[in-house]
Length: 49
Image (cartoon, rainbow, N blue to C red; front, side, top):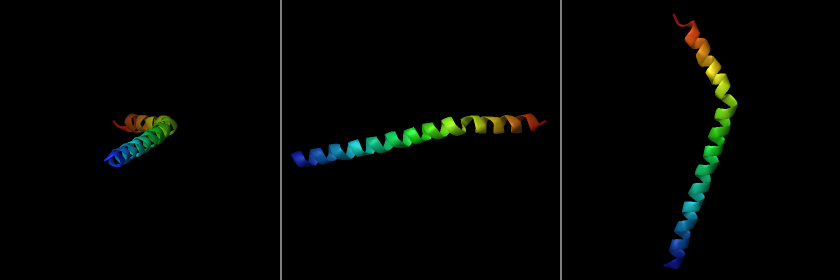
């Protein structure tokens, strides 16, 4: 019974690490490409009548 709880906790920690890494990658991509995408939307918006 104790082994089952330890394995379950290990699985939760692994999922938490994966979610944390995905969040870091998303934040990095938004930081790098945010201004570029913002400028693109501004150009499209200014070209509309």
